Length: 445
Ligand SMILES: [Zn+2]
Image (cartoon, rainbow, N blue to C red):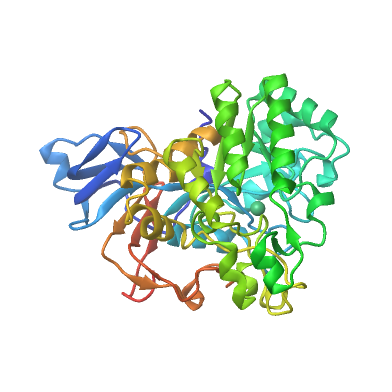
């Protein structure tokens, strides 16, 4: 486990010293708790119940009628700084995270400059000091994400990178990925792979299938993802390296991961909320906010992803929060950049679309959003056990709200869920013992 330094403790206004979250329904799969109770914290850590004398001086947060959940850990967000601050900054991204109940975020290296050396990793960590969520940089596998020369995995790990990824690009040269996976063993850094063969996906705008044909849009075939996933899993098996398949989107990819796990390959995987909920059929309106990479897939793919999440093949749900400016989205479908924001809607989408219909238990939903991703990154958190960081959220299961990007903390408004009514809302987020988000009006989440 990688200890967090004081530089990563986020937060603004505070619960100082001893505090108790009282009378909530605590759901913490990591410690096996699912019960009504109190949760105590002191100086940024979760603690056992203090003596009665001490308890008298505690600040009290009333959680009656609310779930108390471990703070969410997001494996995959584009926070756009340095270089694309018009879309998002580390500060605004952390505020968006806090509003979604997320207390730790792994941010992707597709910035300008690319996060591909130790000074840039340190720059991001420095810039994120005091932000509303802990920011953990993922560094590039290859210099400039160009796929040609490996970065210095040891120095990047030393500087605080939690994983390596060429973010948004597959590693074309298998010899490069082989070496990267060998280094991943040495430094215990997972390699996050984006599985896409650009020679198969080039020029495509949505999932290849009958809906693309009807809409007259060039498709991106499932096989563009699956051939690369198969190759990357074989390389992971061959090397014994750690691989993480991020934003898996097709049924065959889920099957490939499932059988790799059965063979003992060191693979983990995540899926994004939009891939678990939305299909290519929804693109009939040519809404560019539904243009993502990977594209929204077929109903059968969505069902396979949900089944994979339920049976543990897919370990985590990750937002793939990808802010885009209004200009980058308000254009012809073919011209619009792919990407969707997700930090602020992730939990409510999972709760509304997977937990409420019975596809996933609340405990399993919490696990795939907290303990599992924390384990993949090797960071603290994802648990409400005494001794861990006081990273948690209060969730009102009856708080219905309508997604309105005007209320977003993110700098960008490109949500694929705009206008959708969601059940369950985050009422408070506490990161490192400090309140990082508090819901102010019933209408804004
Ligand atoms: Zn991404």
